Length: 339
Image 1 (cartoon, rainbow, N blue to C red):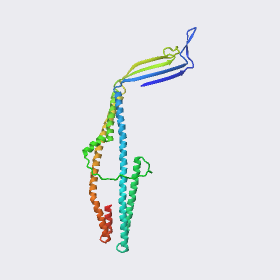
Image 2: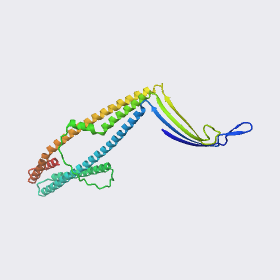
Image 3: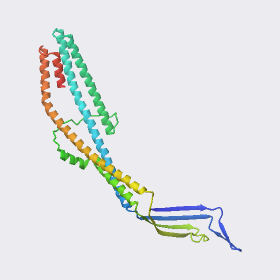
Image 4: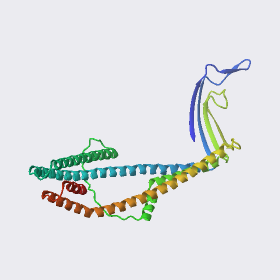
């Protein structure tokens, strides 16, 4: 460390030396001084090296924190977007169901006029239209909420206009569990952060041990002053300097160092457990995500054919209802199955 200090002092009275016949002043009323001091630690039990490494580790840790925030933002935006897109598709489904229900209500009313349907059938058809309209309103609210989350995650105004242009496309994937775990361990910022915290706490433990060693400092200062610091009767600028070494060794500190080491060891064990927990959490999340992907693939494959069957079944039931073969309940069940 290097420091410079400047000072000025005004005295109301200065001392004099009486030599009988004559008297001489000591010093001056106006006193000036400038002092430059340099201090350099030479040995601190390894604390300098430990502090430098800890600073680098902390820098890496800060980078990983930023990366985690960025990835969380990306994930949040993607989820909100596709939540909104899914709600958009569900709106189309409910609109199609509402159109079909209205057409069915029209047919029921026509049959009621001709005496082939009862008032109960008309009421059931009206209730079905109302229920589907309520579901449509709910899906629109769901989309609005997803759009609100999307705007918040994007950091844009809630008054912004949004157009969802990217479609939801199904892509069949079969991830390998072991490879996915390796990717997680190599890329997840939370695991990196846990590892860096273990490293950082290890440096703290080393620093606690270093307090048992002595500390050696070199110091040097140079002073310019008026009056001369060597001869106070000389009212002129003069200089003075000093250089030396200082050795400090704490032989006993009330067991504070030992207690600090115990504390730092406990914190190190705690950070190691957090690292293990982060790794186990990553493995669990990877396993759950792969299971969700497998379940989704099976659902898509099974529903492709079911969708065609349900569409065909509704058409047959509606046609049969017009001919008096099928009942109102069968039409409602077929439409619910298709939806």
